[in-house]
Amino acid sequence: MSFSNLGLSPEIVRAVTERGYNQPTPIQKQAIPVVLAGGDIMAGAQTGTGKTASFTLPLLQRLSTNKNSQSHAQGFPPIRALILTPTRELAAQVEESVRDYGKYLNLNSMVMFGGVSIGPQKRQLRTRVDILVCTPGRLLDHVQQGTVNLSRVEVLVLDEADRMLDMGFINDIRRILSLLPKQRQNLLFFATFSEKVKTLAAGLLHHPTMIEVARRNVTAAKVIQKVYHVDRERKRQLLSHLIRENKWYQVLVFSRTKYGADRLVKQLGEDRIQALAIHGNKSQGARTHALGKFKDGTLQVLVATDIAARGLDISELPHVINYDLPNVPEDYVHRIGRTGRAGAEGQAISLVCVDEHHLLADIEKLIEQRLPKEVVAGFGVNPDIKAEPIPNGRKAPSGGGGGGQRTRRSAPKSASQKSPRQPSSRTAAGDKKSGASSPTPRRSGKRR
Ligand code: AMP
Image (cartoon, rainbow, N blue to C red; front, top):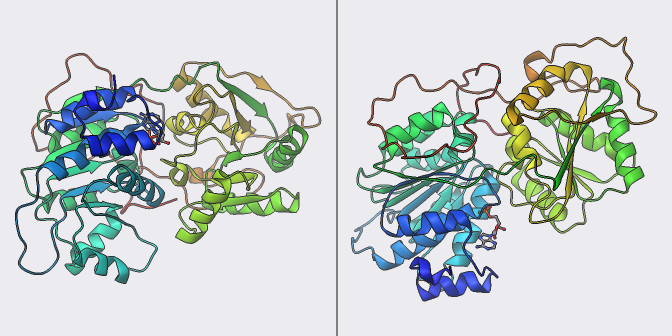
């Protein structure tokens, strides 16, 4: 099966071929024909499956085939396709793909997110923007200022919708939906299926085709998972020891909190290990810089919070370290999905202190697997140390304090709109429910 067999135009096939893709991935095979035919989709797919091209390619083709004949007399030219993403990095990556795959077409795209000045965005929105890729918050800033025209959106894409909901963006999304024309195509992507995703889909999609590509098998032999038990106060020492002794390079370390991430970077620096952090409090410039260095192999350690790391196109990493276990067990699966890709073997190591035993139990329940546990010589566990609560998930192991922690918003109370057609035979990705603690409402979408 080739891309042209899927009904894509020669211009798009050429761009894709130049990118080095010979064959569509499973999600591309399933999604592209449906989107080309104008249908709604609801797709369960994680980063790394080729999901971005699965919506970008047919979207580009539809926009270039159905020329926008409507004129706009004055003001801001209408956006034709709106792609919403939870994070700035994902928005930037998606827009880069849009530009790349659409380079032989006459379509304009723009990426837009907060944390950078709004003036240049307003200027760009005055020009023709066919495809707008953005995060919900900044889009609403423009809506409020009357500097974006959403009245003629033909296609809406919600990328990583589950993550947007987890981040508390539901009200922002509802508000945006209310501004769009009723008649439009909707493409909803999620990594983990949940009640919240189902409710959102019910109000959004019309007779969607359900698509699911295999969830990454977290037990695959390619990812070696291990737990090292260690005392709370000795995690940092152990991490430095492991990195130095094993001469690890390109290590992605997950921290539960922004504060913990910054603190760890400092401590690793004191141990002469070069590290940078990526999280929601970092400026866009700092995030791009850190990611760039990490990707090109000049940065040894990248310390990230879950949401900041989410959706980043960094794959085939040799080492993923859970410095803190995540509060939400599904995040463990997302984290370790960064390693051992495409035939490359990877290690996913969790440093677990006595406070985190219940989190470990939740993870093992979710992945239906007992993880091998070890103690590193010289880092034996002191049995006299008692478990301490992780207050609101804020306590950073190794004696640290808190920092932005993930809270989850409760599912919307009602779904007044009609249900999407139920799939005939399907289990949405990640439909195993976790034993995660009950969600805590939060006012607005926050970034970590
Ligand atoms: P995504 O799941 O969209 O984040 O894509 C993950 C990675 O797969 C990206 O680096 C893409 O450039 C790459 N990719 C997407 N489609 C294909 C394909 N058909 N063949 C090979 N690589 C692909």
